[in-house]
Length: 312
Length: 316
Image (cartoon, rainbow over the protein chains, first blue to last red):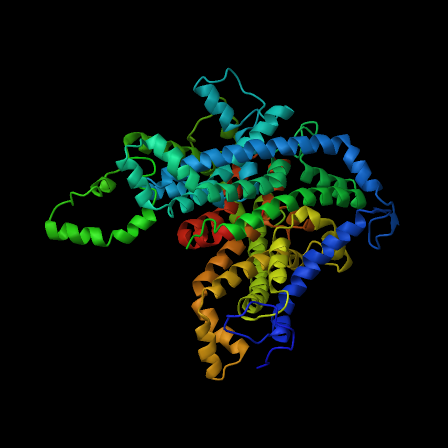
């Protein structure tokens, strides 16, 4: 067994091991480090490099030509990218707000003493476990303009006069994608809230009850403020996810009609892989990363400062 | 019953041991303020819950019905909600059709997805067990930086690295292969497993290592024979969660696989729902098939899933 290296100790005293184990740590971490460096760190460096270049003939040797900052300046004035960014922002705000609101309501409901509560929990687990692509394909069929069961149901109960093309216009399609996304992702918000509820001390609620606070008052005065760390985590998580949205849009509409549901991730994909503009696609991807990075930093801060929803 | 009154169900579970005992002694419900907790929630909450269950189950139910409805009947107006005749042909086509047919393609894609998930988890778990041990047990310079480095790679959006990964796979001739996909998936499964395992190792007392060291065991032996058996539940939930992440992944699979021998089930479902959009029965059957493994795993292992949920939710 190797005894640690001679590195200068900078860690606070009082921990049991005073020795350093630099060499052993290196050995143990090497395999994971290799995987992560080779498959994440190196590629991200390459993306950075590519974003300053134009790929002349993509494969297999990847000859390139340096273009300086031109990819970025193009991106920032690219009307398609700007409208995709606006759309992605709208999708992110609306879907996250809806998922959080429904998630809180559902989480609180799941915590109640319901008969057949297991049934509710199982039902809530289903959309969460459903693969994103299957969810999207399912809603694409549900909302089909000519044969979709949503049209059939709404017509049969008399809510609409005739079949509608739900995915036929950009605005309608975008909202249908939001509905499909909320249907699936409310579950995860609800489970987080449920986990957060279990750590709220009962004494607080009982004390408020004794003081005569009503149900609604108790919810807004005690439960909601105490859920704040959980809500913050869900908010950031869902925001990151929503901003990167790709799968559900790709399967439901392919970004159509008339690019009306194209999101930034979809735009980067199409630029790089349909148009084979690897350089410009890399620049767009990096801009997305920048936004996600800021959101992720907020998340890490939340995770390391407050203890968050610690399931056990 | 108030909204948040029974919010702390699990905590109440801790006291539950006391409660039945006292009830047994007195032979009746205790007349404390606790008795309200025994009451069920009011009717409107049950109604609300029923509504939620219907909203979440109805689409699944329709997929199941559509998958056994004759193709022509699915095009009827008005649509009938239960078929006059059952049609099991899609399920038999999935079970027996050739890999080149759409139905047989679903079966092949399920097999591919399984292999990719198993391979990824095996590779990631191996390297993450070693790395997690180091991060939890060994002291070295830059410890915190390494930990945060792994966490940040986990949150890297796939779109940011997909272009170079594509070029690398082409270079090594691994495009459109299961091995290539396993390697790529390890890029986000490894940091996830590593992060989770480090957390589990941290919960084990260091005295265990010290006792084993005194007995003359080396680090690798301590890890394999002392620590690993103790965090089996943790490893189990990490594995479950990692498999679900692999099963769900779409962007990489879409770009890196194209032939039926490496295409995963999300790609097969996405392609089919785009191309043959009039056989809704087969779309439904394929979708259900793809959903079956994760749904079953989630239902059976609810508790394990909950443990991995907080960490796993970071990924998208």
